[in-house]
Length: 116
Image (cartoon, rainbow, N blue to C red; front, top):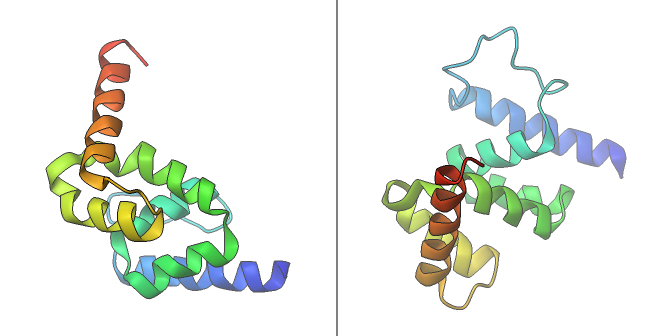
């Protein structure tokens, strides 16, 4: 199981590199070994296609993927609007996705204002 998990991570990392998802990073600093799971999840949700996104669910718990999404992509608001609605409704079974995303964005902004 661990080998399969590592193979999927390697595949996703290769796809991210192919999509130039790390363009703003020093190429020497971007390695799979240095990359945390949450960072990999975030980049896959942001840059890759549906098939790759579904691979995340083979190697990570749904709860972890949802937490990364809430923390990193929900705050993007309209910039990532339609994708966030799709993720909320299809991947995370959220009944009222637009309202849920608005609430998450408000929490994020309040946390920023309060110094968090």
